[in-house]
Length: 360
Ligand SMILES: [Zn+2]
Image 1 (cartoon, rainbow, N blue to C red):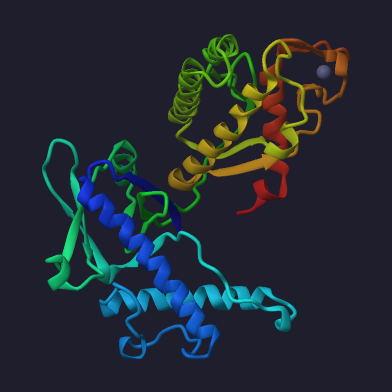
Image 2: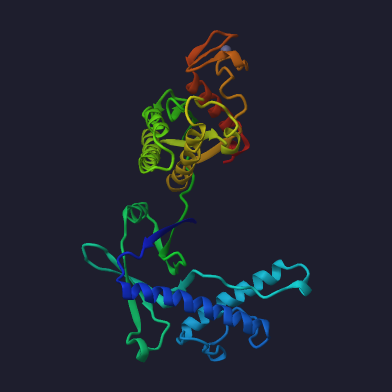
C-alpha cells in the first residue's frame, strides 16, 4: 500500500471555530492525562477498549464516543511507556503534552461544498453537550489544493477511517493506493550532476537550467526572502526535470541510480558554489524517483557509487585522470564521451547486475 498525507490549514475557520478547535485539543489532552492517571492508580483497567459506561466524565468532554477515543489514546500511551521501561520499579506514568487528535471514522466525515475560498467541509461530531454549545457537530472548512487533485488523478483514495486534528493547528488527511505491480521493460542508468541534473545511459540529459538556479541562490543572502524563493524555484525545477525524464522513458522497467548515503562524500559537484545547495538536490531527485517508481511500476535500484565517474564504460579501466571536467577521455583505450553519460552507463551496469536488479 502506498500512503500519503495532506495537510490543511485552518485559515478558513472563523475565530469562534478556531477557539473551539483549540479548546477541543486542550480538553482532549487533559482527559487523556486524567485517564492515564486513573490507569496508573488502578482505578481503570489497562485494556484496548472500555465501554463508555466504564469511563467517567471528568471534564467538558461528555460524549461517550469521544471518551472512548481518549481512553484508547491513554491506554496506548501507558502501554508503550510501560513496554519501553526495562526496570518496572522505575516506571513512572506518562505525561501527555499538547496532543494531536486521531479521529476515527465515527466522529467525522467530509462533504464537498461550493464556496470561493474553500471547497470541503469536515464535519466533526462535537465532544460537548448539546445544550451547552447548541450543536451536535460543527463544520471545519478546508481547501483541497493542487496536491489533493494530483493524488486523486493518480488514483489515491482518502482513508476515511481516520484523520488528525494536529496540535500545530492544521488538519491531516490520509490517502492510500494499492502499489502498482512492477513491469518488464528496458533498464536505464541515471547520473545526477551539476551541469545537468540528470544524465542518462541512453545519451539523453535533463535539467541544464539547474546550474543557473544554483548560481542565483548563491548570489542571494542566506535566509532572505529572495533566497527562499530561489530554493522553491530549484525544487520546482527538480520535480519538473525528473518528470520530463520519466515522460521520455515511460517504457523503462528499471531505473538505476546512485545510493544517496554514498553520494554525500563524492566531490562531483562544483566547488565554486555552496556545496550544500547542490547536495540537497540529490535527495529531492531520489524522493521524486521513489514516488514515481511506486505509482508507475518501474523498479528503482540504488547502487553504491564505486568509481562510476572514473571507470571507462568501454574498456572498464578505472583511472582518475580519465575524467577531465565535463569530458571523459579514457587514458587506456582512448574512448571519449561526456563524463556524466559515461557515469550513467556504469551505473546502469551496476544496477542491472546488482541483486536488486536481478530479482524477478
Ligand atoms: Zn577505456
